[in-house]
Length: 206
Image: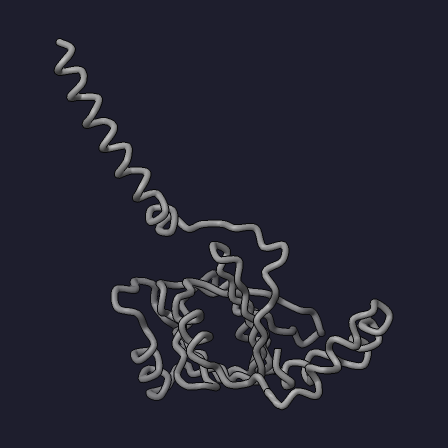
């Protein structure tokens, strides 16, 4: 965790809870760190660009938090530079809650998971929405993944304010279909070898 994330997340109420629960001394060091933690490095880029989905939180005009899943093919989220990420927002259920929220408050929190490797990355940022203009069409064309059939309604460009790699504790490993296929390759190969061996033995026994 860098200093910038602590500056944004550790409000007076949060710091008081840290004091009450005995962790304040750990995070005071973060707040005094020279590492701002607001510029994405190669590790963050590789992680983000390999995701096929993430969770985005925004806040309604009435103060309620709201979380929406955003997904697509791997690579649909683009890291444009050290402090900017973007994606083409695909058509969904047309409730437009997140879209309405960010029109009034551009702050978002993003949560990226890798269940297989028990890793998670949190990003705080501010989003700009491009929709219905020539500039928007240019952004969408730049961000769309080849072969994506769902229409993209807008482009969302997020300025990264801070990020934090969260601890892997309590993350239950889960696997996608493609990840399972990769893991099971040696087992399938071994099964094929055993089936071939069984056929040969049966032929010899006849």
